[in-house]
Picture 1 (cartoon, rainbow, N blue to C red):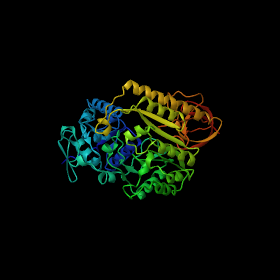
Picture 2 (picture 1 turned 90 degrees about the horizontal axis):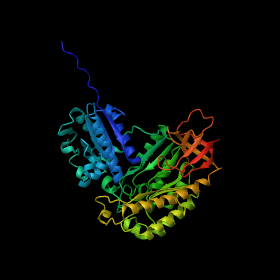
Picture 3 (picture 1 turned 45 degrees about the vertical axis):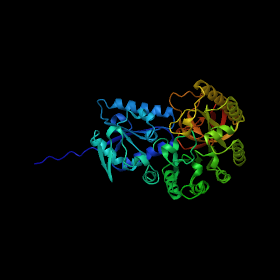
Picture 4 (picture 1 turned 180 degrees about the vertical axis):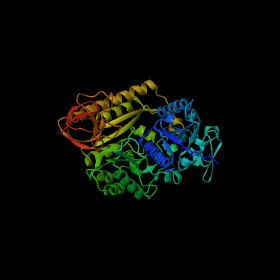
Length: 483
């Protein structure tokens, strides 16, 4: 009499997501595909058969973080159930053709390129069955994993027009805050700023069909989202590749036609393509956050030209004046680069004076560093690191003073706050503060917060909106009493 075979346990996968919100959306789609394919998901990589790392490769600090995570995961393989550590995402794409970055991936047993995402379930089954195999059979051929490289034969000419575009329509297993949903409207970037590696990583812009975006927005709202955050490498160019012209304003109007009392926030705007029509839509509905996130990078004409930004100081000032006119009580978030090759002390001082004008609610400053395979990498990086750091600190100190003055004007005023959750354990906050939230003027995880004294509120539920009064201003945050 033959013995019954014990059913084979499905493979267990864990995933570590690094980098920006755009990566988080990819991670949610990866998880959705794997769950559909019958995989089990472990939060702790030590309990998994395969650990996936959705890497970030945008700047050196991000690459160091990705390398560190891969290194730590390799240690978990000693005597545990973990068999394979797999790198995927931006750093894998960034290292393709840039051999000097290869060392950041040295602790990955295998690598998965963007175009192999649709085959991910097949690849992971092959790795779980035989992590040392040289070839993994997939639909339409094989995937080779020799010499720690996992990539289809077409990987050298990766394109987002087919396989990855198909992936963007895959189901999502939501992670993170359930009341905030990132909605990716396009992938890639066609702007080619001279310091930026994104076109090398993510390819040229590919916009998603408008109907697909609206359908997903409805699904996210039906699933409990209270804020939709529109994301892309360049949201303002949406539709240029797909419809022969920029269609962001039309997309926003379609999203506003969805009923409900939720917020919609526009992230990652490219200033050159931000139009009065877009601003009119942003100002047309109280559900649209009066908030613009757009990197300016500099204000000096020579620096803007050297960076390939496509606009000069006069055009930048005109745009900021238009935003202030259309959204007089709105917020602008921006970023700057300091220490770009050839930046003079006078150009730094010009940028410093520009920040001191107080136009920005939120601003960050990055120190320039050479990115391999970008046009700027051919320039002489002639500013010492210590001077770059001094310039960055001066710019951030100027923005700190702007932030203090701006927030002080809110004290005593009523504001509407969306709760994000209780105060994190161990956080240093003023006495009586029990919750953290934001107004429409702050984006989640990147800007300041509202520290809430929620008297009489038995349960702090993320996504709930409360009327409050600001009672104290800090450097970047406000303290508020619930009314």
